[in-house]
Length: 179
Picture (spheres, rainbow, N blue to C red):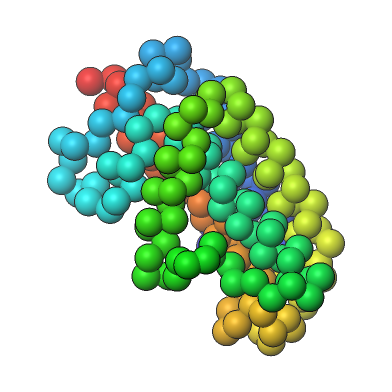
């Protein structure tokens, strides 16, 4: 599946990857659901997130918080309240620290609650995406607050692409649990 360049593809890929992610979650055993992540034996897994996220809750919360970034960014800017996509004071060089903040914020969130939050925010994202035209989503310079990208690229990043990331992580965890 390529990267979406139309509203139809954006929504289809988001929904498809959401369903695939849910299928993986629904087939996980109690052991897999409750076993902490451990990717320390795989030297290829060097990115910070492989060490940051310790369980399935952390994955779901990460997805939820990135949904919130998108929802708040769009809603604020549409109301005329100029806001950057990432939370202040973070930027694209320091957003890893923001992700750690999300992780810390939710250490007392239960897995069931994290899933409910993720489920609702996914629904909110899809509903919001449906409100925009193809041109608004995939033409540059439609909204000055989007910058040099397209609004659709942000939707793709917060949904289909992020769900791919989550699925890879869950599959690696399942593989580790099978050893």
